Image (cartoon, rainbow, N blue to C red; front, side):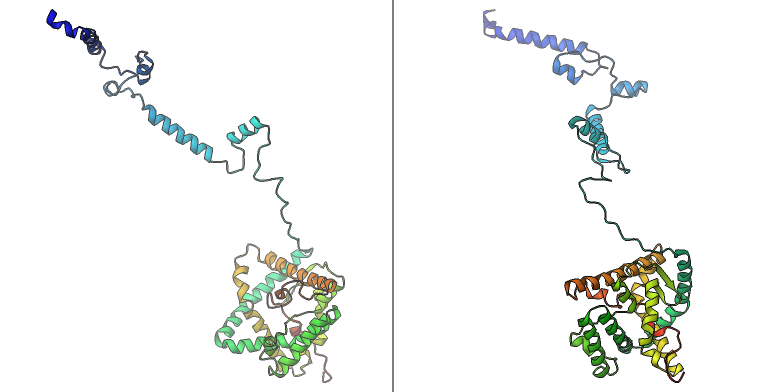
Length: 358
């Protein structure tokens, strides 16, 4: 015993290890100690089946705690990120509003944002009749005018077509000069008259356009615009057969411009009809740029009507503002120019020309 005296302090440790070993051998093998129980010193629950129990008795095994928590977190994150498509507040938004006493944010209407812009509505009380006339004009255009214009654009070289456009544009300058003067724009009247003189002489009858090289702007004006500047601003929309979009005011304007039309002074009917037909074909080729927009529109009639009415209103308002401010550049030049949305000119109006021979 004296030889074991130095190892007396190890006896309690050896006894403790033996007791732990006996307890482990005596524990049931079909029970798995709970990690939580080992942590806090409590015994493991006896009703949790193991994987061996599940295989033997077709009982589902206890799921992995980490997998369950991860799946729950993913579902919660997805539910929190997916806001209702109809704008209904989420539970988190409702809880926040209840906690802090603030109204729930409504993405549809935010009082801090400015009111939405309201587009002006076209005054079109004759819409049923106008739509019928529009359908007639569209049938004529698709069945005759557009195919003819495509042949013209394919056969006639571009420089020649440009010369034709310049020629007919130059013929409209006297009408523009007079109407600009009636509108109180002497500067614009002088520019239109100057373009006519320069292009008619140096431009060989208007086929060439040296006035543009001389920086003389092209500003078209007509009597319908003049009446709008005088005060007849709001006029109902009117779709004219073969002439297309107008207003009632612009319909009277065509009658006022007709006596000044150079083509109406041509007494030879074959020549006059030929020039008028060529002018219509040239006009249709200039509309190719907007054909794709028109064909892709849900309501082609409403698209053309609204675009034409808004542009017309801008033209009239720009002149009124220029007269007040003594500034001719109230709006961009393209709003003055018919090239942005060309319309059938007064030159081709089917009237008997005022000539002595007839």
